[in-house]
Length: 403
Image (cartoon, rainbow, N blue to C red; front, side, top):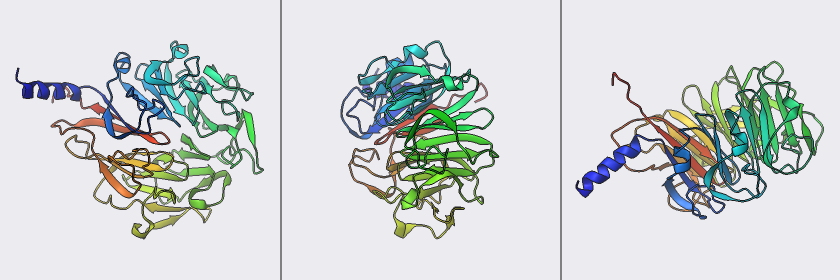
C-alpha cells in the first residue's frame, strides 16, 4: 500500500473513533498527553486506558485535574493529585488516565471537579467526594483531606442527581429540586444565609429556590448558579463584573430562555434556546470580549446590577455548546462538520488555553482548528474547561442501516 493511501486509511479509521483533544496548561499532567508541559495548540490524545473502557459520556475539568465518565459508568482521572482529588488512594499526580478502583462497583452518572476536590454521583443517587476538605467542601462534617471517594452520609436518605464543585465549595441537587451547599461561604456562594459564613462542613439547604424546578447546578471560583426547567438562570456568590456579592439566588432576565450556563471566576456564558450566547461580567484579560464592540442589546438582571451582553462576531453561527475556564471562554458552532473550524475561544491565553499557538489574550472570539479536514460529520462535539486548559470530545457520526 502506498504511503499516501496508508495515511488516508489511518485518518478514516481515526474518524470512526471518539476523539479527545486537549490544550493549555499541562505541567501537572492535566492534558493527558503524558508530557508535563503546556501545549499551545490542540493535541489529539492517544489514550489506550480510555479506549479499553468504552466511550466518554462526560468530562469534568478542575483546577489542574480531569474526571472522565464512560458510558458504562466507570471513572478515570488524571492530572494533579496532591490533595487526593484523583481518588487513587494517594496524593500523586497522574499524567495518564487511571481507573478509580474504589468506585468500580458503582455506576457513576455525574461528576464535577473543583480546584482541588472532586465529586461523583451514582445511578442509585449516592454522592461521593474526595480531595481537599480544608473548607468543608467534601461535606463529611470535618475539614480533612480524603484520598479516595467517600460517600456523603448526609444524603443517605435522599436521591442525589448532580454535584457541582467550585473553588472551595460544593453544591448538590436532589431529585425533587432541593439544592444544598457546603464548604467556603465567605462570598455568599452557599446561599444558605444572609449573614456572612466562613465555612460549613455539612450540607445545608439553599434558600430562595423553593418554588423553582431546578434542572442543573453550576459552580466555579466563588460563584454558584442554577438553571430552571422554564429557562431561568439564578446566580449567587461573588458578583460578576465587579458587582456586589449575593447571598441568595438572584434571577437573570426572564425575557430569555437559557438552556445551558458555564461559569468562570469572574464571568459566565449563557446559551439560549435559539442558539445565541450571552455573557455576564468579564473585565479580566478581555475574557468576555471588547466593551467597545458590544452589541447595543443589554439586559439588566432583576437586581439592577448585573448586565448581560450578547457575544459579538457570532451573528452567522448557531451556538451548540459553551464552556468557561477561570478567565477564558470556548464555544462550538452548529456547523458540526470536521472540514470547518468548529471552536471559538477568547479571554486569558497565558498557558495556551485558547489553542491558537500563542500565549496572548484575546478580546474577541477566535477560530480554533481541531485537526485535519474530513468528509464526515460529527454527531457531537462537547467542550470542557479547567482553570487554564481546555478539552474537546468529538464523537463521530455512526451511519444507520438506511444511510
